[in-house]
Length: 433
Image (cartoon, rainbow, N blue to C red; front, side):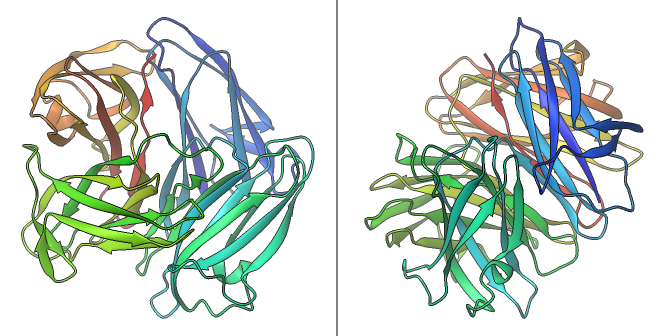
């Protein structure tokens, strides 16, 4: 098993100084080897404007688990990639603490599909956490609630059948609600999902309940179906009242996209969600490959995410994207190791021009590393960096990609794809400041 931490500086003017802090399950600082150097708990960093830094833990025969906390003198973006050759790679972005949150749960024991949760306590005092399981209809099964104690700076990770050993979850779909029971204390969490085949391992974001988004529209910047590729949309209702939503699929030109879903060719689907309930829509994976994006409009605030399944490569999940004027994301490519990073971008309203700029880790623009891309209103583009920048030398590359708009809000996400099972994950983007 190994872990990599990738940090970007979204400022065009300020240098970011900070540190990466590693904590064990118990909350103690971790003693581990990073970039062939042994560290005890803290790793300092300096990142130039629009640059990045990456730290990779050295593979060890000792299995060490815990959490990462990053502090900086300036706003930053960060992601952690972790996993193993057998399990696959999962990427997770920053998870702001919250008092309560909800996440989708799927388990099929016969196929090996399972969902778990990883929780961390970012405070110097212990926290009691209630964990409650709900069916898609918002009903708590018998034995579906318990309390977990998180020590100061502590961490806890388990799959749903381990958390609730007395609940029959061999074939289960629903939600899990996590709440801090300690007054004034918050927690961070992320969902873990295992697929049916080797290498199918990903994370899914959680949806805060105590700090709901002000918008009723969710933007999912990539959706694909066909040639064995499929996508699943997970919707969760973070409120105590029933709600509904419509999922619309849109192509590169900004017009409705028809795809195979539930045995029919559709360009939209409607969901009714019970209080703290959920809905899941999965495309068939059949037919010719088509791609675009999805917009979710709810009657009230809901949470959503998408999970991709790539034949022979694995699964990857990402949450809804936030509309911004410009964003930055870490990107990398290796011809020798046979992997690359792609980017998916949508224009949320009007059409116009995108400026895409490729920089090295020091924030310096690569030769031939800037292009202009025309976008339709509510249009979409998804390309790998070598396709976007064919004249730039990205054969063995690690750096950042910034995307800015001259025509209004955009949203995006990054996908990292290799050639072997498990080499498939998503990476978050950060608003440029």
